[in-house]
Length: 281
Image 1 (tube, one colour):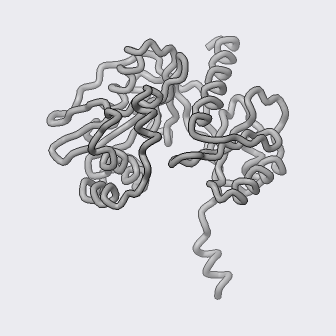
Image 2 (cartoon, rainbow, N blue to C red):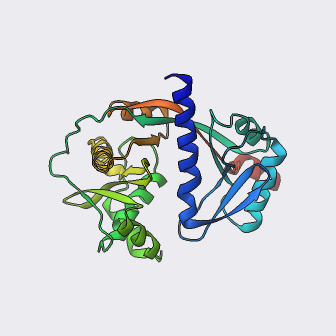
């Protein structure tokens, strides 16, 4: 990709990332970061300010994390590594757990078959089974990876039945087209789901997830393809996503995506059980 095209692409990604959370968050400017504080159900993060040209230092990261801790929100940062590379080292120096994940854009949409016995449909604003649909992703991400596992419809339904989440804002965003959600269903009900969130001529595919018991059937690929088809039918010019690992990125590459950058994610490190035991011995 020519350097001018790459620079334009990165600028488009940054504008998108700065716009999307604002529909469900208030903002605070803390040093070189914009902190998005959720006003709804879904938690957000801090990102480098749009157009930032300065180097981010560990103390900058520490300041925004301290504010997140004060507010009782997740200690989380997100950024595009190629746009603000200094965040990676600064976040690590500040003690956060850092990942750099593949960021891919759609190059050409490929045909993906829907597995036998499965239907894929768009979720409507008045979806009666919205909680089971939402629970698919919750169960899937709680049991990460791509391997087949035991959690399945029973765990999905138990989580859905216990949910007290207010989905009013989500239903409003589905109705307005700001959120496009697809669900794959078989005889056991919802088994895979995913979302794309259009802003202007750009959209990101997020949250593609399959119940562990239903993995390795091509459901995630089929849901992704349905989201791509909807985005293309809506004349969206840039369709992109981030992959949870290189293995997952290779799956998306087989669907017509190509790697263009890296998505930086930093959060609080998990407690060290060994360290905890030692401190109480």
